[in-house]
Amino acid sequence: MAKNILIVDDEMSILTSLSGVLKDEGYQVTTAPNGTEALKLIKEDPPSLVLLDIWMQGLDGIETLTRIKKDHPDLPVVMMSGHGSIETAVRATKLGAYDYIEKPLSLDKVTRLVHHALYQQQLEAENLNLKQTIERRFVMVGESPSIRRLREMIKTAGASNSRVLISGENGTGKELVARAIHFHSSRSARPFVEINCAAIPDPLIESELFGHEKGAFTGATAMKQGRFELANGATLFLDEIGDMSLSTQAKVLRVLQELRFNRVGGTRTIEVDVRVIAASNKNLQDEIKKGAFREDLFYRLNVIPLHVPPLREQKEDIPLLVRHFLQVMSAEQGLKLKSMSEEAIRPLMRYDWPGNVRELKNLVERLVIMSPDARITEDDVANSLADPLPVEAANRADDPGHRPLREARAEFERRFILSRLRENDWNISKTADDLKIERTHLHRKIKLLGIQESSRD
Image 1 (tube, rainbow, N blue to C red):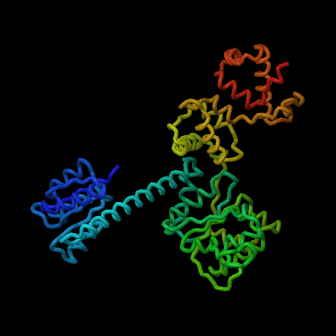
Image 2 (cartoon, rainbow, N blue to C red):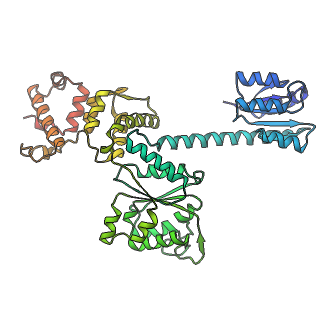
Image 3 (tube, rainbow, N blue to C red):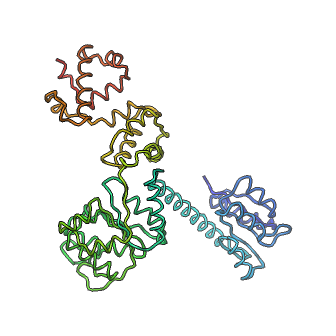
């Protein structure tokens, strides 16, 4: 849809000439002969941009600008005047005008200015949308005492410039905590640079952290900046730092002490201002005792320690997390928002979540995609939570004494459904009626439990 430009001027010749030029540029144009009429039009249907004359009878441009910005602070307004002065331009800018242009108007300059103002408005809207999307995706959900306490500690830590060491099991959300600290810091407008120390082979980790010069090693065909350099003035997140080799730990320690380093193969010293946040799923003090982690690096990083609790210790947050993930996943998948029945929440509250919040998030994503109805049922959850045995495992001896509950339950379901299928000569519809479940659910159970028609006899 074409952008709508409102032109406000008490000179008919200006309204006519500007309207013609802007319409030729593909814009929709509305005109007003005075400030009062302009405010009325803006209230009824806010335009994309306003071209506003300063000197008009009645309500002048400065007062009109003041009222526009009060109700529509993000609406770009370009001021026009044939009797301009530096003082007037400065005053208009302080009141929120996007720019100031003098008469007689250069029509080329006006069209360029309008284009730039609308383009900047679009960029600001996209940036705001991106920031809201990121904040929504990385929001810390929960009202349990441990999560409330963690949120308060994040705010306190974010306001400082000190290093933070985050501990917690895999899947608890350590990266989310690191991002939240960054968002609450004075560096939030700068990048959040991250590196997973466990995912990068040891021969490459130094290049990733400190960068390299062209020709530093085979394959170094160009200079490359490292994460420390990219995070200058910002935040660097060292995830799973407990998996870093001792030799690399020594080099990271030196950078933290001196805030300067050389790229691999380089001689020029690079100074940086980096806030480091580190995380590990390992107990680093145990790693120190084993000789696998440097004690001096631990104390450099552990200025503010934060622990992220496992989901099994904050199960009261599961309904809130489910509702949040349903909203996020439905939006990401382009699907209508799905809901989950109270009965469907119950098995989630009984489950111990070895994969923590990450496992819950993945489950909800699977349910959003795979559940056929808008309301997710207990049966949907049971099918997704079940960890069915492979066929060969299900054919083992019956004794469940040394099996986990899930395995025993899955094998019982398999044998029970298989016996009903045999009774009904593998008639799926009749078996579903006998079991009091939907035909599609029975099909899903058969697939999940590895039941094959070869088991007919």
